[in-house]
Image (cartoon, rainbow, N blue to C red):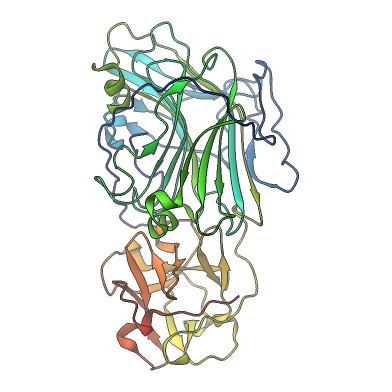
Length: 453
């Protein structure tokens, strides 16, 4: 999809709004004979409540929702929050106003989440919800599968409708990663799967278009529930991949080799949020119809209905588990250890280099799925979400923002994709008590960190 702004702003920090260019996707040929991934639900569920499928053998459920609740009620507030305001804020050209009204977003009482677009002409309201945190990621050497049962909107005149089921990583778009698992426009009963990564505009990921399947036939997707899924596969460490599925049939794959290891790692080697929304108008539907949508004939009341959503992982965690206990030392330049100053767990407490002493302030744990570093129940964090050389590094409540993503590089550096900088021993210091910072990645010895195994 043409990207929409990040669903959260971290603890009082400025959050740059991602930009998206209008894109045009051609209509691809119908799905051919494709292999079925056995663990994914297939077929067309009934209109009644559908139980969330249990984790396939060898997998673990890390997030799910069956959307149970009274008719007319809001979705579970511990699992979902709203993006509200004019669609023009999202950088996609869409024209609706997103609300938290149950007129636009509600449970139907039969185990479905309904997102409904209401309006006429250029005046529309609709809904967009996302998980409050980045709930799911593929562990290093493992896989992430995210799937939902959805019935696409089926208005009499669907010009301008743009339903989407997608994922977004923390930090600056597009380098933080986006995975569009299901999109259709103009009620064409089609589906597209797309990834976004790298730099905007252009870059190896062709932003703002991304790398996608193009719209493909999705027979019956407006009149019944179908499963839309993706698998992020990190088992081949030299060439990770993302594959898109419709009712268990794979129809499109993108690999790490297509974009390069550093771009891929920054985009997908961490947790992402799950998002559902129903937009009206914008670059994608306009590009497909070659017109301005919606128009005076577009039908009000079209609904995207979701029966369930689930995320599963193999090879370890990937969910929003609490920061792990224990850990080991991270050593850097001059043999000094990365240290939480004075063993203080207060937010914004400085992280420094210090003589290795085995205290809890130096017991770091690497959380692979999020590429985050934990100590004393807090996360290694770029102060204020800064991106400038010399921005200091501290600890803060773990919040899945781009300020807390640290991706180990082959040369030993710890790369923060939000700032495009590396963790740096300030001034090549060998003086205990020097607070660390971020700096342009140089490959220097003061940016080499030895992580616990």
